[in-house]
Length: 343
Ligand code: PEP
Ligand code: MN
Image (cartoon, rainbow, N blue to C red; front, side):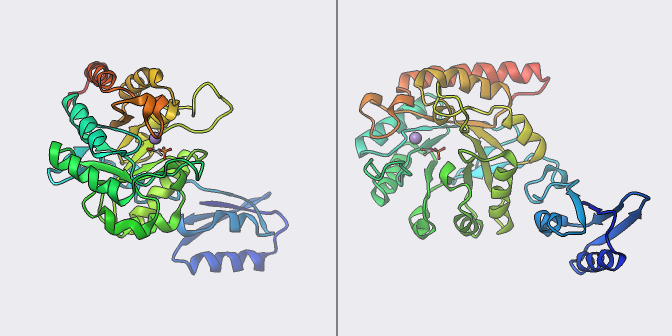
């Protein structure tokens, strides 16, 4: 971190600042020029509050030269992380592709078992399904809650697919004992108390990017979980809010290569919530596979027009099969184009 001190700052105030920084186990390097004094701060500056420093009346500007996230940072962990999911330790990351599919919400035993069977047959590696639903309106279907998780577990017994489902309240954690991947939805990406609780578990976490959050903020949220000791995080780009109204959100696919540069954590893409329109899911899924995503999470329903949630963006099982096939073709082509071995 670099602190530029104002030209008229009194020497004793500069010395106070240096003592304060050094008291936090950091070293300083002062370079006093004719026009400005520059303090270089050396060490783990992630705990230093840059805004607080900027607010001091002797400080002209503060610049971070390294990012405030450490555990998620590729600089300190150059190899890709591989997250292991479920009893069979299914791998995600570093060329291991996750194809997560299932309905937005678990609605009934018949529905979830039938969707689970068809997505498995089409090549899905995990089953998704919401039991606790974060709905914009309190009058909309809120999910089957604990019963929904029971039904997901039944679908897992039937098909062997690991299950992914969203948590909205840390008090519900006991219900997630046998859930393989806990999803943190976009609306909870900055629910820091929830993130801290998940940091105490060792379950894989699918952390979705918030509707209006930057890539850096997503990484800081991952850092919350990792700071608690849980390093099993899969990031998810699911579209962000922009001025565009033709799609539900705007899929920020450039987040995939940017995240791969900044972090060692795997990144999956959700083309369903990103577009909100079933017919746009295939092209965006293919594009995500082409730009290096480590997986996809796609909504699939046996009867989209009658879905209790997100029917417009849900694929029928046969449409999902077509997408899965297209994604396999793209992955082979992308691996060849990048001169890599496909895995
Ligand atoms: C979901 O996956 O069903 C969901 C609610 O997603 P998001 O949090 O990305 O809106
Ligand atoms: Mn949904």
